[in-house]
Length: 224
Image 1 (cartoon, rainbow, N blue to C red):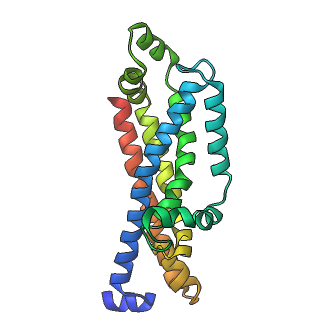
Image 2: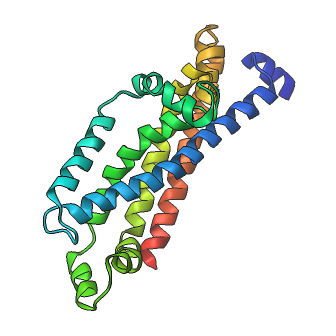
Image 3: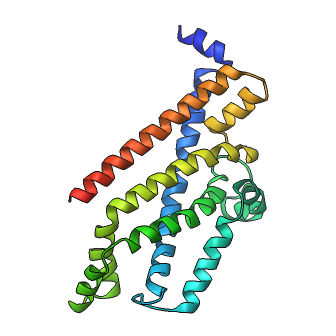
């Protein structure tokens, strides 16, 4: 029965497993790297903004404009535009690992804005209390800001993961593979509507799992 099912799809089971692994690899590695960059940029914005702990109008403006510029570039264009950078970093312009560079570049500014909003939701009174206790900027960030914003940050990361899932389909332009590329190469180009429908169902399942896990973790974080 399994063999007939994959014969109907026009692909092998190994192909599907490989593409699923490629998608998960691209999503979660680029999400991890993008989250690190995003939270750094978010704190730069929050700390340097007007009335921030380290108010600096120049730093805030430059960082904000930089984020806005990156966010304004469509992913497909960004994918091709930074090919020389990709080559310099990973040694190749094509493949699943090469796709991590544009994916990380794409998601970092997006997450930075989401994380910024999460950090701004923290009650300013908590930060003022921490300052009055003589806590350093690092201590305020680590012991007060991050714990208070944890639930919101998790939800923001969940949104980023789902956005990356859609972006991985376009990463097929540089031979990155993945479930989305499977739908385009073996589904759309070969007019295989059955395979296209199946890949959509697989992606929907991925989204539901990611969102459910994110909601659960955020709920747990807010109860702590």
